[in-house]
Length: 91
Image 1: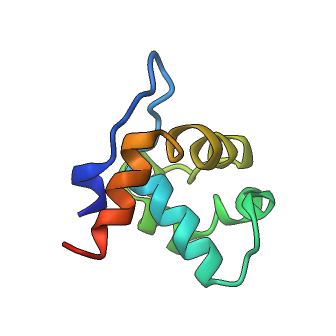
Image 2 (image 1 turned 120 degrees about the vertical axis):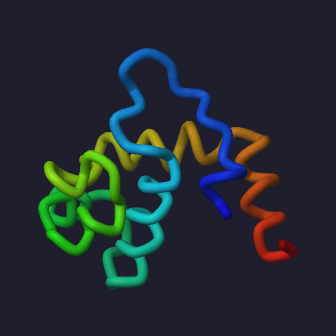
């Protein structure tokens, strides 16, 4: 459901991973006990995380710490995305 509601405001070549894949990496990283995006370097090579992120990550690598940082501070915090995520529990 999140993939259908997130607004992708990225331009150019910034779309290596879908926003829903980045959201999965963020959520599953936290569920696995990793506190912040600094652990993304280790997790991006983990086969299970690559599968969770999906898309190109399944055959390459998941998002880097810098990609995750941009996701969590720029793209996820766009007003439309915050409202969409807040509404997910009601759907």
